Amino acid sequence: MSKVWFVTGSSRGLGRSFAEAALSRGDRVAATARNPRSLDDLVTAYGDLVLALELDVTDKAAVFESVTRAKEHFGRLDVIVNNAGYGLFGAVEELTEQHLRDLLETNLLGPLRVIQAALPHLREQGSGHIIQISSTAGVAAFPLGGGYCASKWALEGLSESLAQEVAGFDIKVTVVEPGSYATGASAGAVKASPNPLYDAARRAHAAHAQSLDAGDPTAAGQAMLKLADIPNPPLRVFFGTQSYPMLQQVYADRLKTWADWHDLSVQAHATPAA
Image (cartoon, rainbow, N blue to C red):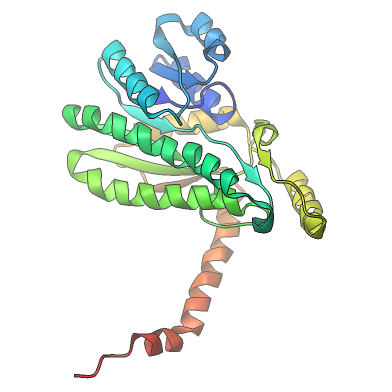
């Protein structure tokens, strides 16, 4: 049986690849974008398989309305993909509080609103798969990415709790952590006003970004189909080849640090006197 998808941020990037992959095999997709005209080509190509919805995930009422429209239009919801988001680059000292407020409105509260709108429908039908698009930056921080990493680390924690809360309703949760992809998404990132003291870090970051072997978004779309079809999907999965080798070292370093300082941890516990 074909699946019904609700995909935020379907106008471009990985969100577009996920929507196109689902449609190409005959699934139905409620595709959302802030500018619905950006979805016209999907409607032209796939007709009634697509429900194009205008949606800014920072608008709670609009999120609930869009999810309800999708459910009423297609009769069910099988796969919820929280993909809408953007990047923020700048040293922590360069960030403003407004930078973080705006980022969290989209990258954290946006998915929260979609989840809260979709859960009653998924519970009623006794099934569903919520897929959260995080990032390698959701499990390992990098210089000049403190704000963006904070938004994705928060999404990871939210999603891990959610997975435990909804397991009894037979609703699955997966956090997808993509590496670098050739989507041009960085062009839409917000950049903090630069402090010259961090110019060397910016040059190093740019050189590292240029050295990466960016993944193919079409391949990510096909991987998403496989993930959506797994009866017992993983809680977390990397998309791309860059993340796993790097994260092996990151976690090895974390475990070593905790072990090296275990005596201090025990000292900090201190059994209270009777």
